Length: 208
Length: 174
Image (tube, chains in turn red, blue):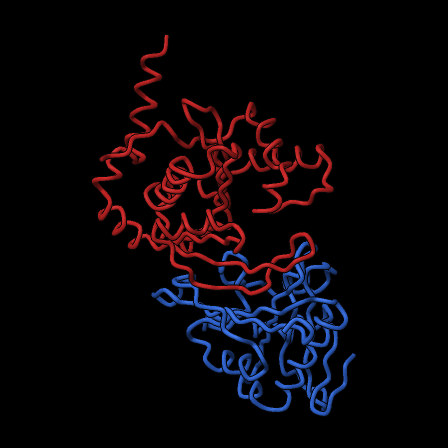
C-alpha cells in the first residue's frame, strides 16, 4: 500500500527560533546529538541565529539547516547537513525530532527519507554520512532500514553520564539510495520531493 | 623538547613553516592533510606560518628532527575537544620509510605519552586513505586497531578514495 504523508522540509524562519532553542535545550538533544548543558539561553540563541543566518540561500553553503514541518503537527524537528564538501560531494546528517511522541514510526522514517532525498536529488551529493551513538538504537535501526551501511564502529567513543559509549558511522552512497528507492518505489509512491513541492504549491494556490 | 635515541621532537615553531611547507604540497592525497570535510589542506607558506603561530587548544603540532638536527617531518594531535576524550594523531614524513624504523617508533611513543599521560585522553584515532599502505602498517604496528572503512570520502586524482579509521586506547581503557 502506498505511503502518503504531509511531512515536508523547509528553510528555517526567524519565527522558528523559539522552537529550535527549546529543542536544543532538551536533555534528549544533548544526549543523542551534541551541546553543553551549561550554555546560557543567550549563547544558544546566538548560535542558532548564526546557523539560520548562514546557508541555504548561498550558492555553495558549507552547512544547511532545515525545519521538518507537518501540516498536522507543525514544526516537528530539525535537520542539519553539515561539513558539506562540494569537492567530495558529501555531507554529514544530524536529524532531531523534537516531538518525542513522533520519534518512533513513520514521521522519523519520512524525515530521514526526506533528508536523503534532499542530499542526493537536490544538492547532487554522492555520499551522506551520519554518526549515531550505540545507545540510540531507534535512530541507527532507521538508518539501516534506509540502506545505510555501518562503515565504522568506534568503541568507547562518547562520554555520557560518566560512561563511555560506542559510536557507529553510517554511510549512504547515492547509487545505493537510488537502488533502494527503486526497490521500494511502490511503497514509497507518495513520498518524494516532487510531490511535496507540488503539494505545497497547491496549498499556496488554494490559500485566500 | 623530547629527546629520544634517534629523534628530537619539539613544538613546531612558526619559522619551521618554510621547511615543512613541501610536506603540505605533495601531489599524492594524504589523510593527514584532509580537513573535517575530507578536503585537502593546501596552505601557502604564509598560511602555514599563521597556523603554527596560533595556539589553539584543539591542535598541537610537533616538529621531528634527527639527532643531527635534520628535519624528518611533523606529527600532530588535532581535534582535541572539550566534550570528547580523544584526538586524531597524524604523522607526515619526508621519507615514509622512516615510519617502519626507529624514528617512527619514537614518534608513536611520543604521541601516546602526550595524549594519554599529559592530556588525559582516552584514545587516539587516525585515518589512512586506500593509497597509504605504509602509514596504515605503521599505525597498526603501534597498537592502532581498525574500526572500519568509510567509502568514497575523497575525490582525488580522478577517482573516489576510501578511508580506513583506526584507534588506540590508553592502556587503562584498552
